[in-house]
Image 1 (cartoon, rainbow, N blue to C red):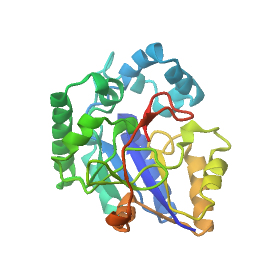
Image 2: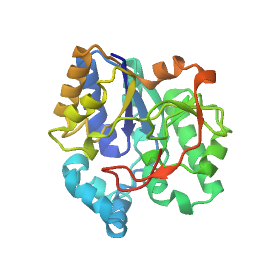
Image 3: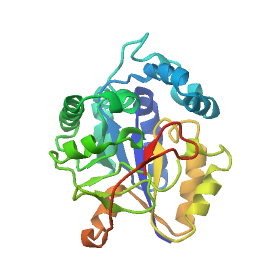
Length: 285
């Protein structure tokens, strides 16, 4: 069997406060490591109410995943009726704990919600400021620059890839693709999430579906969310880890995947945007 990479996104204040500690306990119980992609700045999740009006698929997802039990009612008000709290910046001790326990920490977002909802309408100057604020916050928390960027909701465009060039990223994890590749025209490797998210699948059958996709003996990357697998889907996540280890898979972070890549053997590819099953908006694939 191959390796299972854990790409753990932290999107909300509740996910950082409650989900991350639970995930750390789970990973410690199985003696495995993952890569935490942190949202650094404000939690404007309350703005998602606009998406439920504008996008019926988003409303369908919220109902299917029992969003209040995943995120909590306060999260639904942050950035609207309640002030938007800082996410990772509110928990410097927890960030230190993630690192102390041997996990990789990388950059996910400054303001996750605004990127997810508004990126196409924003200017290049807004994107540059978003990166600058997020990376300064990341360095304040960790004392180092991030080696990787994982775009919120797998949403990128050509402007984002141009701007990324000015930052010292060693790899990206911004797409839902089947195997690693080099972004064209960037000379940066992409380590994509090839497996579906738990919340895109049936609650009970999710682990079986994902395990079936991993039966080819190859390497795979599972997108994990602190609010989901660190919440009501914890037991399903435990079952998946247990079955993966029993099958002989190595469970690890994405940095190990990157270190094993041979750049000149990777294909060069251009992303495209596509609506995947279980998603409410287009993803880079």
